[in-house]
Image (tube, rainbow, N blue to C red):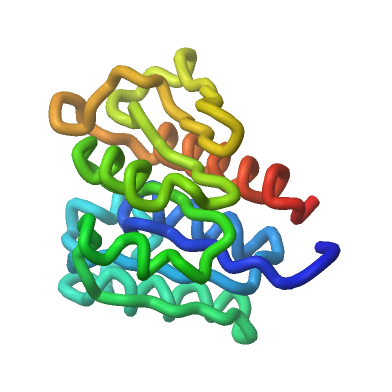
Length: 182
């Protein structure tokens, strides 16, 4: 990468967030910041970058452990916290790029409203079900990209590793390409 080191912020460490993070680290990104307030549940293991012996642990702590096994020199800041309109802007203030990986649409909208002036924001929308044919990318304005099928809500459809991985990989690729890492 040419220029200063960029910091990537990730809002959520579940299916999309944990898999975007692993894709970025495996692609050479070495400066990330992740916030989530959840713990690993056994039901997460089918699609999230965690292992059975990590069930019950705080997601961001386990994610840091897993990612630093890939790159021990990784600069990673994790925070076990619930992001909301009162803390989002401050949490991501030192990030050049923000990845939205929330489960609930109200938080997606909140992130866009409170962090929407960042250089680049990459979001996920529609990762439920196993149908892969409808996955696409939409660009909104000059700096927002949304990846998914834009219709299958995880509250109505089961999530499968294949679709989550594809969407997360596409999100990571946008960060790499549009963020100037390639």
